Image 1 (cartoon, rainbow, N blue to C red):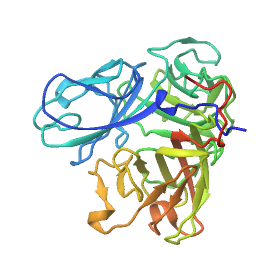
Image 2: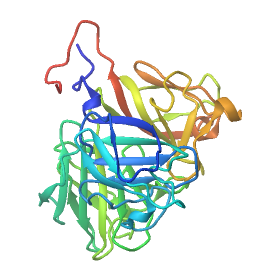
Image 3: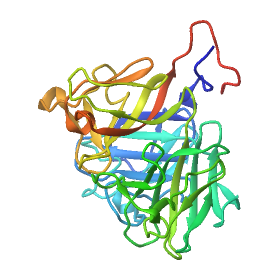
Length: 357
C-alpha cells in the first residue's frame, strides 16, 4: 500500500534560489508551474520578507516580519507578475534590495492555488477563494464584520493551518491557527510570542470542510477591514501539520512526515522563540544548516560558519532534529510545524491511486 495520494509534490510547491542582477523587469523561471502564492526573502541582507498572491494581485506585497498593510509602491522592489513557470520582479530603488539587487542572493517559496479566485458563499461572510483541492491549499479574501462569523475556504476538507492578515491600510499582526494548538489558541507569525488563549480569534470553533470561524479580534475580523487568509488541509504524501516535543539532545526528536521534506516552518509554542524556516534548495545536503526566520528581516544564518548550531536533517520520511537550540529542541517544550514534500515516501513497487500527474 502506498503512503501517498500525491506522487509529484513539485506540481504544487517548489523553492527556487537566485542571484540578483538589478534588472527591471526580470523573469525568474524553474518553478515548474504558475504560482499563486510567492514568499520571497533576501538571504544576504536584512530586508523584509515579501509575500504576494494571485487573489490580491501582483505588485501588492505583505511582509511576514511586520504588521503593515500591503505595499503597492514599485520603488520598494516587488513581484510584478505571475508567469507560467515562475514570476517577474522589478529591482526597486538602490536603497531597497528586497527582490533583485545585484549584490544579493534570494530564495522564493512557491505554492499553487487556482488563479485569482471566485466568489464563495459557504460562510456567513462572502469570500473570494482560489482553491487547489488536490493540494489542500486555498487563498481567501474577505471583508470583516466585527461580529463572530464564518468564512468559506473552498477546500472540501478541513484546514489544519490558517494564516490571516489584514491588508487594507491598518497595521495588524498575522494571525495563526494551527490544529495542534486547537481552536482556543492563537499565534502571531510576525512575533516570537508563545501561544495564547482567546475566543476572539477562532471563536473556539474548529474549521470544517467548508468554512473556518473567526471571532471579533481586529487581527481576524474588524468591521470593514479587508483580509487575506491562506488555508492548508493536510494531504498524505504532500503536507503535514503537527507537533512534537523537544528532548534537549543533539540527537534530537524524529518527526515523522511520511515523505521527504522540501520546506518546514517550526515554532516553540511555550516560549519566545522565532519561527524557524528550512528548505531543500538553500541547503541540498544534510545537515540542513541554513536558517531564516519568518518573523525577522535578518539575513540567512549558516551554522556551518557561525557556530550557532540549529541543524536538522531532511530524511526520506521525516525531519530529524540535530541540535539543542531552543528554537527547535528545548527538552519538554512543544513545537508546532508545517511541512511540505519533496518526494513522497512510497512502499517499494507501489503507486498511489488517484495521484496527480
